[in-house]
Image 1 (cartoon, one colour):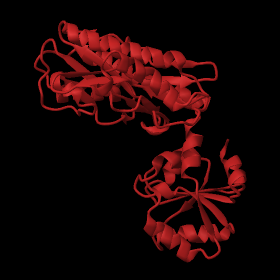
Image 2 (image 1 turned 90 degrees about the vertical axis):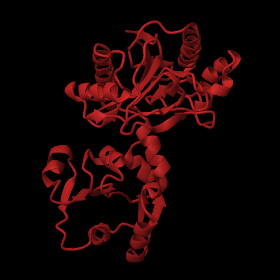
Image 3 (image 1 turned 90 degrees about the horizontal axis):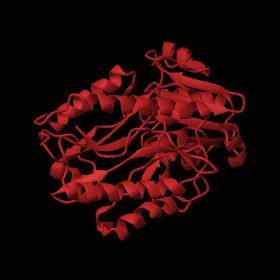
Image 4 (image 1 turned 180 degrees about the vertical axis):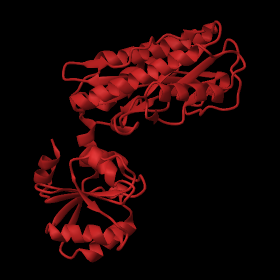
Length: 356
């Protein structure tokens, strides 16, 4: 389904996307190509408009084929949006109510008599979940940058380096290799901190023999990657090796069955059942994965709560983990492309524990 089909299916004449200081950059970029932090996008069957201020007038010309309407500050921004919607005689307008404040919705309703606003939040998320060939190539590049940055960082890691120092060098390498930015605050969780699934890098020093969970990613031209690996300075314990092998096999089982037309719950279950059967069921609490694209967490979800069939050409993470409180944690995460016949693993780093 494309945007025009969405208009037809929902009986809409217009889509309106409001982006106040970065509040809705992903949808704005998806529809128009514009990556700035302040805009209004109006999309109808015969109109393609971007409204923004002088910070972005030149940028719009570089990034988008939409017509630019210049917001000059001589009136309220929303008043200009109202005028434009009246000019094109909009009557049924699709809007993301999940991304639009109640105050803004009240203003639009009070100033646009006879206009009905229809929530299309979920429909747009589903549209974004299905990637074009161009989007898939950008994600591949984002993955490659993240992988190369990780390998370069392993070359300089040593006992006594703090988690923050490791993260800083990794993030530096992402930029040096052409990444826009890192996908999120890099997780570096060594030793006992590995049992924190989202253990953001701390001042803790990395010690010899302890497993270090690294969860990181890169954005490239607006598209994200998301990976997790475990490394150890010196030989890990037998318990660490055992837990890692369980997680490794759980991920393998999920990837083996992963394909479009299965539900997120079915793929999640393949990994979860293996971990449970190995005696660690109580130590894997989060869902198996999520979509990636213009956001690092988006649709579709590999979750025991997701009973919807997954679309072909979506890119999702597969990230089982086991977290043993006050001891250590293990997680392995890769990015896969779902197809009708199976899946393609887009990431290529070895999944074994990296011994440095």
